[in-house]
Image 1: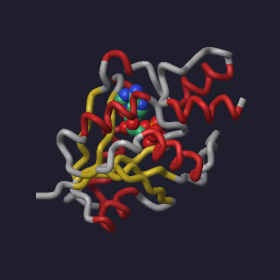
Image 2 (image 1 turned 135 degrees about the vertical axis):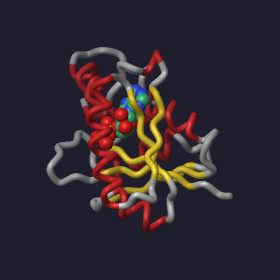
Image 3 (image 1 turned 45 degrees about the horizontal axis):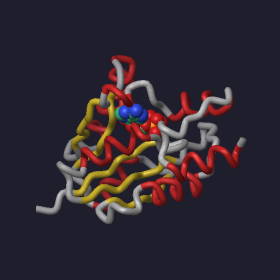
Image 4 (image 1 turned 90 degrees about the vertical axis):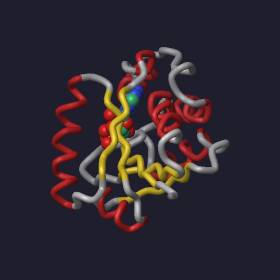
Length: 158
Ligand code: ADP
């Protein structure tokens, strides 16, 4: 069976924490589509095109991974491509409440699509896209926390 999952998120920008989730999820799923969310109510540092390109450049050695974007509901996207599962990551208890509520909303829309949660590895637990952006603004070297193509883009945005 060819099991397809989508990994939805803002990815503003993708970090080594996200990358770790993708690599581990590839042991469970045959194919993963990373889905960049476009939420008109949210302010992003990077455009959707930039976010998609950074993910493609960061994961180019993984042919099982593709990247797309949507301004609609992630569940609708999953239905459209025939995905069986949605991948999410959990760092701390604070993530749990938000993810639990999102999962309930998604199950309400379509109970056939399962959300699968991967626990963050210890060394990636503190990494979030917002922390990265704050660190960069404060002049901290984040080269060990993000993939090389993201590091380049962050420097260009300074
Ligand atoms: P969203 O705005 O949808 O939360 P993010 O790009 O911030 O988008 O995160 C996408 C998913 O990846 C979320 O489930 C989040 O909990 C998870 N995630 C983010 N950073 C990490 C990390 N360092 N380790 C594990 N999971 C993470």
